[in-house]
Length: 209
DNA sequence: TACCGG
DNA sequence: ACCGGT
Image (cartoon, rainbow, N blue to C red; front, top):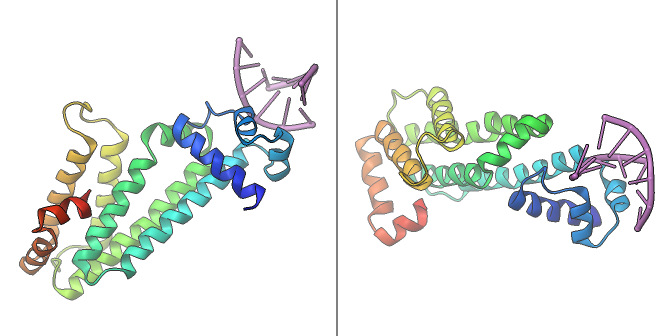
């Protein structure tokens, strides 16, 4: 693996674990056993390093979202997979990190905003359109409006702590949102097919986790 | 590694 | 005091 990738990957791990600003350039170089000068041969400054890491991370997410569209038999299964992507992508990119990006690395924050408006929005819009064609989702639903609503809803409940962590886990809240979402979306046929995917309780915890 | 400047 | 950058 090339040194540039190695630096970005390790820095990414450290920053995900400890936060962006608390991981210093000295920390990264010491951890990798290289000199700081080596890092600055590949990255102009810390901002550029963070931007690179963000870009790499969002590319992986992008492949996951697009993969779930291709690997699904029908729109109901695709919705389950896309929702899983949505929740996980916002969970592991956790609140503290998002706030750090917003305050101190606005370029990276903008990349994330673009990702939301691009990949995420298209994935959800497309699965809704597909579901309507297949007769599983209600035709009255406006794909664009509801897709935006869904994204903002998921993000809002992660970013703002509306409930104390001990009252409801993040998972409980997100499952409530998902349940409420699909009850406004599915036709009778959609519900029946969804139940087939989730009747096996064991399978349910795997797919919806 | 030491050092400067923010 | 600390950390990005030289």
